[in-house]
Image (cartoon, rainbow, N blue to C red):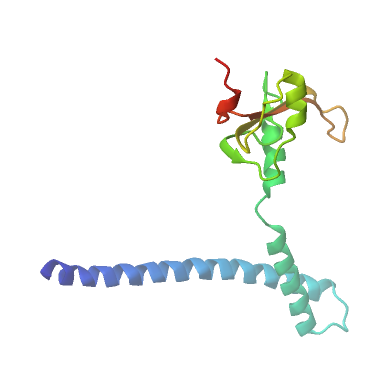
Length: 175
């Protein structure tokens, strides 16, 4: 108990210093934002019309700042995919993911299967497919022609294979 009470002042000091650091960081960000708004206000005052009030200029500049902040967003999934393709496209023997690649050990199919086709193909009327099976998908692409014009047009060759395996269906095992 003595060691806990002795460490309390250090904990309080640490929390206070952390709070001061966070406050300083937030003030720096606020200062950057207000500096941008102030620059905008000065620019609008120099080039704007005489009929515009200072309050209107402030609103204009704050709206521009909020629009600029919204535009500085992190890239989405599609943008990240294009960035990854751009980075890898010129590497020799590049194979890139085209559609999602996955392996599912057990999948339950709730809509059922049409056994008729399998019975005809294997000429076995006793074939009955299970609703539980394994699945995997392999999907790759590689560049065939890169940067065909100024519009950055690329041509890819792609292959996708989705497989369904009745690995849990013991009635299909023929020894």
